[in-house]
Amino acid sequence: MLWLAAILCLSACGVPAEPVEEETQQPELEQPDNALPGSWTVPGGWVKAGQYSTQDKIFYVQEGHEEDEQPDNISIEVGTNRCSAEEHMKFRDAIVRQLIMQAAAAGGELTGEGTFTEQEDSLYIFTIREEGALTKQFYIVGDKRYCLIHLTNFTGSEDEEEAARAMADSFVWE
Image 1 (cartoon, helix red, strand yellow):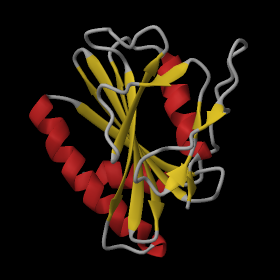
Image 2 (cartoon, rainbow, N blue to C red; image 1 turned 180 degrees about the vertical axis):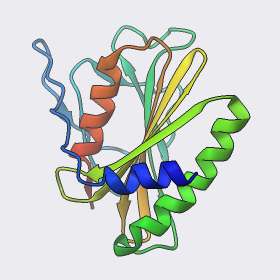
Image 3 (cartoon, rainbow, N blue to C red; image 1 turned 180 degrees about the horizontal axis):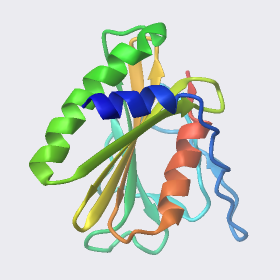
């Protein structure tokens, strides 16, 4: 746990990834008909998976994979916490403790890094690698709230990671 905390502290000044651009389809700004207090850009080629989405949690899959049994997917949801935006490291520590337990139970490996979104919000990125899947969680920390963009990647494609990162970088609190 100490090594993870050290990694997170040392990597807090990362550079945001370049947004994903598709030649055939332009990203579109999500104007959600849901309860999420924010907006974000959905990268080209990704569509809302209506059968899994709710007002409080929206799922996206790559176009053409809506009916796949186990598609790579990105979900987005907003929650509350007790920490102000300035206390983001307390929030990070709580998430790290929770994820360490989850990764250990699944036999996975947990890594993490810290950086900022394009809007300069604190962004923590946690990766859990386990057999058959990669999970990447992007926590955008607001004032006593957070946005979680959660990627579940079964295929190992880097395009999915770039799409999730682009969504995190584009997120704007309302």
